[in-house]
Image 1 (spheres, rainbow, N blue to C red):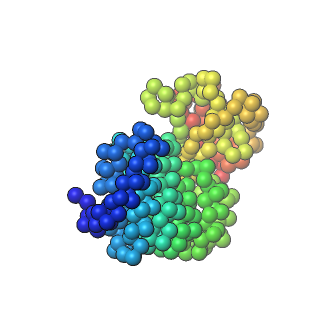
Image 2: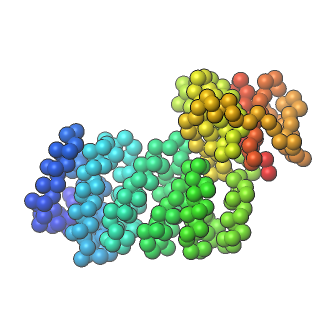
Image 3: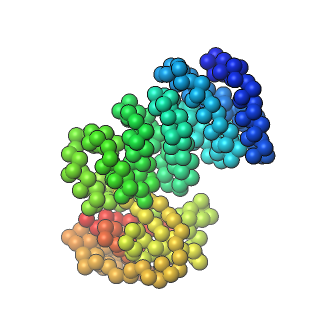
Length: 323
């Protein structure tokens, strides 16, 4: 059963809502009205109830805008019980109601931003959508306008594993009041200018151990053959089989993008002076560590901040901070 407030709005505007649904079915012949009806109950109803409590005079206008958006999302298979990724359903049902005042005043920008973020996070391998939703919910009471919502969402997406968002997230944090930027970064007691400098200078700040990325495609991973790696300005260019990739990694996560053979050919094979290999012992400056790999054929690559370790005996790439 849907709520009484939503039922009342649907009943009073039945002709208008029916026209919108008919128009959507003409534009999207594959639109499944049963899926749409289920999403109205599961996704839109909680939002209508939240907006009615926060700004009752704007509930009707919000419902019309959200109804149109719901039609398109379901038509594209992005929302509803049969959605390609159920995370968007969760965001509408559990996260978006926390932003009811903003939804009431700017329904399309706010719901659009939250929906786009859900779709993107749900589609990036290695991202942590549940972390993003949890941290967005925690900071919701401190967000007062759409610009802050957008900036905080970007910062938290980076922290939830979207490594290539790092520089954009730092720029977005610059646009926020310092207390809100620090809250989004999980360091409320820090000094923003100092923290900003540290984040820009060291992508591995807060993660001295580095991370491992990649696995065999037959086990759900990304690489058909053990990868070969070369350094690039913004990450590493990877060759596996006949495919090339750009790997971007930092303290928060690692993300794989497409790349070209030309980019691989132009990528660096040079190692910085502090990095050397002695059998299976890796030396980075004064640090030394034993690698759990056969000493023969261990390969190293590096960029300004990171050393990557590969071997023909594994499909994983080990990434370690240089600092």
